[in-house]
Image (tube, rainbow, N blue to C red; front, side):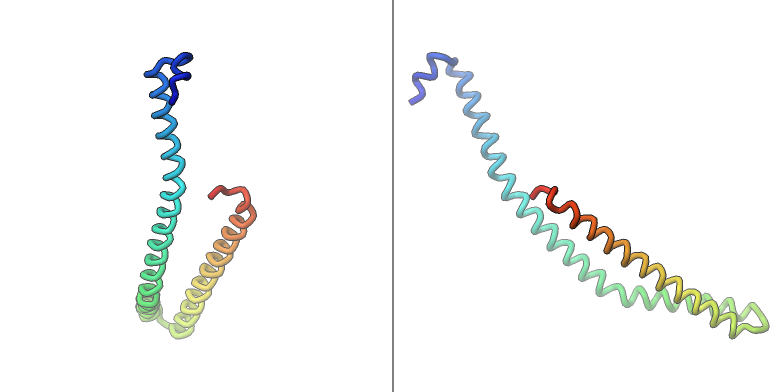
Length: 125
């Protein structure tokens, strides 16, 4: 079939190039399918991790709140006069700090998502 080619190129060299062509073609073909498979696996793993974190978050948050309350209660016992007011101020301050941190995090994640949307057309599949 390729007898005319052997007039111009050595048989061994021709077989090397054909092998290389087959290997590169297979790589290009299977790379597409593997990237789809890997991305679907990654998405599934991330969804499972998010679900697990979502289930654990209320318990973790309540434990943090309880630890903060215990710390503030212990602090208020050692302070002396006006301890109820100081305790209330510290509780309010800790709540405001937590809300500010959550707001900062929410704005940061929204910014990151907007940034990805700006360059999405430049990204390759």
